[in-house]
Image 1: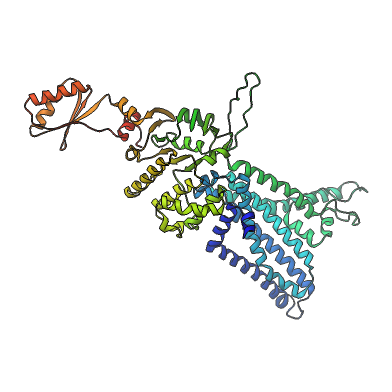
Image 2 (image 1 turned 60 degrees about the vertical axis):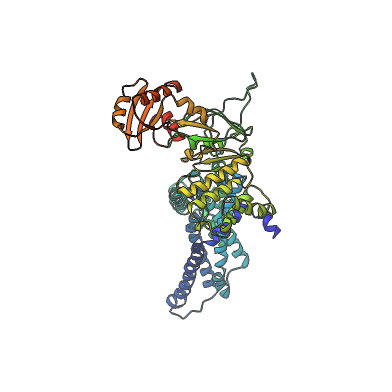
Length: 313
Length: 309
């Protein structure tokens, strides 16, 4: 067990214990698998019995469609779950009045923040892994490669990391868990919905000006596609269908042979990696008060007057 | 050990601390007294590196709390006035968590934790979930947590608040033991009168200002300008009370079923003279003594009827 002592720091160890000792964790896992299982079974039922009057067998294209449906359902479930699991990690400790004692230990701010995030992500990963048997139904019918599946799961991890980092940030900034949860869901909603709506809106304007303006022979792709790259659903589809990125940037009747400037999922990962790093950096800076270093006055060599306006908890 | 110079803390327009100066030598038990909201907890939070001062310097064992917080944290054990516990952890797990958080190796913790539990009288609760402990037990467990890294300084913010008398006595006994161990303790508490014999110095803070500071006996002596004499006589008590009111150096006379309480501003000679007068008037005196003032009286006298402790 030496490896665990080496790699699992006290905060992580405590988080794991506390997380797995509450019945809520088991219930969340059960509820999640139930919802996703019902979606899978519902899809099979609709496809086999309602859509085709029971005549058509469930083939690989239906399997592919089911994979898409499950993947989207999973993405939405993650969007609901990640803020709930992370937006209270610091403010919850503050409300339970345990934070001040944790902050007076030798654990660094980075250890506390990253361990809290990692433990929440571990639990979410456990839930995602627990849904694998449901995905195995897809493999009965084929149409999906293992590589695609692995990519989708890595993408989920990234989305969880993004929402988790935002949850931890707001949990550090706001004293009340309730406010932190609301703000995290609000920002999540912007990432999931606002970017999509903004893309459709901007695209329709650009399309209109493209057709009403003089005919051009220049570029046929538009900057508007970048907006869709900020949307998790857009990025997810670009993982299913690599040609989707091209379509997102293209104006109608554009030249299909021209390449997209960047794959949507690549843009998603690049942009939000910066967001994740910024969110975690701010959280680490703000969890404890940080004093400015004293500067020596060259004239007299005395320490300068120190005034600090850092956060306090 | 603790050195505070010109410490101020301002929240918006409110001055929580105004130019506090304080020096607590090593091994001293310092009682911090003041009404709620006077600035005790703010001072303690700054010493515990949880809050930054607006100006001024606070040092623990020579380390500035804002410039070297990690070094300060190694040296202090902090118990906040209100604290929670991780209910889903067992008592030993709870201490292991904090021990590990102070980078104490597991083998060392295995030896240390039973000793700490014994010190706080929780040995029989080692395998119990923290959730199942009474408030007093949680308070003692929290004290054990403060001690796990053998800190030189203990910062205890109201360690006995909300405890029943028995639990208070237990806490007091533990604190006495800690004093014997040579710890420097800064303690704010409602039970200061009870702790009078173990507190070396007190500091009285009000509206963010230190209004009195020094050895308990010195402050008591300084305030004893007006003493209260307690007199019991065999009979004619009311008559004596009326007669005493006309005496010089007597500012007030109260009479109740325990006897006569005389507010007297004279010194020892005048006090003897008064007794001789009473006897010469023909009263049979059962007892004649100076009423003991305790820390609570001292505090109330200094803060002049401010909010209760």
